[in-house]
Amino acid sequence: MRNRKRIYRNFSYRECDTFAAFLREQSLKGWHFKEWKMGLVFERGEKKDVEYDVQVFPKGSEDDYTPAADEEYSDYCEVAGWELVDGQRRFCVFRKHGEDVVPIVTEEEKFQNVCTAERKQWLRESLSYALLAGLFLCQYVLWPASAMHFYNNMIMFIVCIAMIRLLWRVADGIWLLWWARRQKKKLADGEKVTYDKAGMQKGILVSLREDLSLGILFLLALQGGYSGLAVGLLLFMTVIVGVSALISYLRPNKGDTWMTQFAIVMVTLIMAVVVVAIVLGEGNIGGYRWTETGEPPLVQEDYKEVSGKKEVREEFHQKSVFGEMFAFWIEYVPEDEPSDKEMSEMSEEEVEQWEARRWSESDGLRYEVYQSPYPWMVERTWDVTVKEREMEECTAQWDAVYAGYWGGVCYYVKYEDAVWMIQTGEKLSDKQVQIVREKLEKIGRDAQGGLAARE
Image 1 (cartoon, helix red, strand yellow):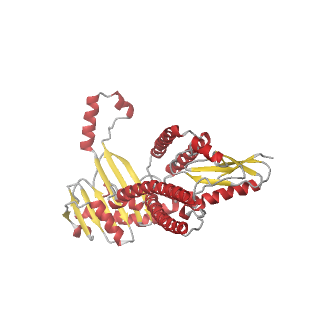
Image 2 (cartoon, rainbow, N blue to C red):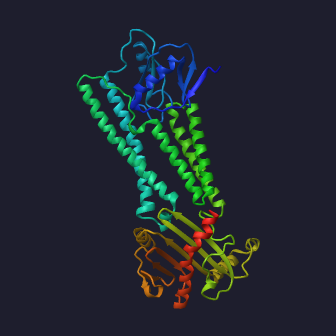
Image 3 (tube, rainbow, N blue to C red):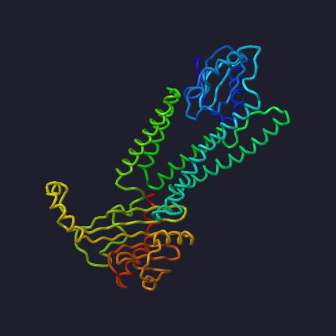
């Protein structure tokens, strides 16, 4: 028969009375609270009614793994009939050990302590969520570097989760204000305040929110073709949970809190590097290949004569709730391109000469195709892709809503349900444009069959 058990349960500061009642309930079952180490640790003993008092000390820190109360205060409580058992964060757990005891703090002090601790925790988390939400919103929605982000379910989900978390904290802050005003009125009327409501920070709600978010993110990574990222994410979360559990078990002193933070930051950075290495090691940042042979839907041979060796630099497909996008980059390089071994044996000057020749003789084609059933998303994609460039209009040539030729290298074309970016490096004739149009219009139809079957 085991003599110890560990219970993983979190309480908010507004639940300190519920916390004390929970510990008392365990003592009635013969399990007495001993310490806070990787959860609440209980020791088997005689079944008896043990009264606990859980106090909140606002001078503590969310990063404390030892009791917030100092030694002098603990001695004071001992004299008053309360033995300090253990504590974490701003919680301190006391056990009654005498008959003639006095309250550790007055009702007004307890109310003030709980409110102060709740406000500090709320402000800390809310600022973090506001920073993340603002960063993601600006980078991926308001001023994105590329319209590709709109067509990635994983990125859009991350943005939504950041916003939902921020709104969650805002809603809980409103609930906290309402709760504080109501309890303050009770005190003024001489009524006893009970601390048994967690608001939106109730443990089971927070756990469900976190687990559900991570689960959906993992599935979206797999659905989007980011298998390496999904594995890296799982590995990352496993290590973070493991490090947090280890720190909770070792319980560093208050003076060593900075070491805890340093350890978490270092592990996070190392795991971020590992995740990036895994993703890049796949050789494909994301999405599905267009064909098993790697043959893009449009290449230079389709509309002109080319020479050199063809290399497909990039090809991927993304799909989101807003539509889907395709990107391809094909390059033709001189046939006599040296091997890696030959390059390593060349002098620095010879390498520079080869690179200059390769650049001048290579023939490249890049294009991105965005398709969406939503007119507003087409407009947003167009705005982000074109970015107010001054273009030579050629709408009639492409039979589009609008088309323009920019900088002597690139075409931008908008249809009612699609946006194209075609970087040809040269101006195309009407016949060439007709061929390009037929090839790109066929992408959506082919994607429904070829890609969907492989998914």
